[in-house]
Image (cartoon, rainbow, N blue to C red; front, top):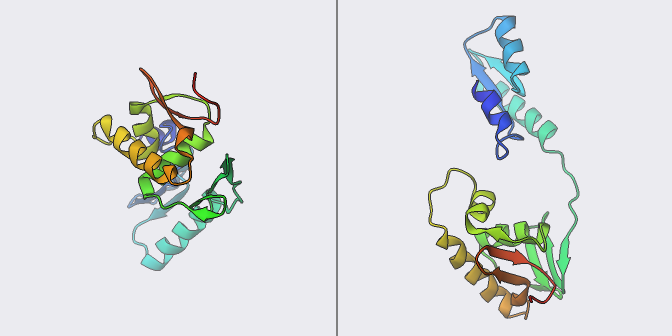
Length: 169
């Protein structure tokens, strides 16, 4: 049931699952695999075997795909190297500001509420104030301001924030 729940949840649907269990009967293994488990390892097992199975599952579920750079007005976000540059100069961002910028650049010209950004950038089931988003947007804008790119992060009154190259009306 837990594996089915993980597969139905948008935030965990792609999470690799290895079931570790004392049940060795074929019916239990089949039930687990049909519920969405990626691998099934009955007890007792060695740490070496678990490690090998984890590596195999990660290879299958997380292929090395060349991701394209996100670009706007000289601002370049490289999702592979996790670097942000403006006209070739590095922009220093904290990990949260980086994830926030990556999400907004991936979804340009769409306005998002603070609570939606909390779910998508910070992850579900976090219990922090919506205004935390404001703090990180302020830090992101400050980092981009040195390169005259802070205008790309726009406040949408009554809603939240968006990334846009268009001048706000």
